View (cartoon, rainbow, N blue to C red):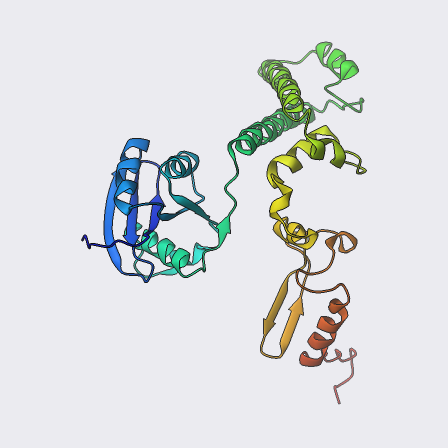
Length: 317
């Protein structure tokens, strides 16, 4: 399918690990063409060149989207990133294939209904790569420490120190006489813990060096309970805080605002998805902090109170 068209094109790209599907259409939804390409910058540049000057391209924030977004931007395209949760409804179609997915993405973009994710710049992606990798290493180290505790519990050996992997704890472990295979397993786990600790320490130094001149990184550490590690994670995940027009939008993005559901005369609220404390949740987006009692009142008017349970040995009236 190929139709002559001189206007600006809208392109939906269904990105996969090995190949991708691109659907091109006009601003009013007329299909212009479809192509399947192997995933490579060369093939993507060749295909997007057929979309004319400065096309609007949308792809999902899925596995390995960095190279595609960078290639499209370098080719002069206006790149948009679809949020995976916002396009989850695609999976409920009776017919789902790559071409329909790409066409649906293009339709959402041209109609202004696309749930978009932020395209982080290269420096933020690099920082996220380091902070997220550190998290994975810490989780792996915690798993190995738990396995050492599990071995000692199996053998009925009580741990008498607060930190089994501190200076005194390591000395105590060195003096333990364990049979095989338990001694070999504990020795292997301690070696892995030591190696991971060295890698984590190196990452801490690299991250601190990257953020040495970042004003937000130093400012946020003035808050109680936030040290260098958590501050680096917050800076990496938020990125440019100026993309949020007001604090309530940042709170909503972070999942710290309560849920709000309306249907007909029924209005219900709830706790935030991340279970933030009520004192820290702040006002609901678009509402003042005084709107919560009104919502509760509306809920109480539409929902009848539960009937009292009859006392044992008596009959209800």
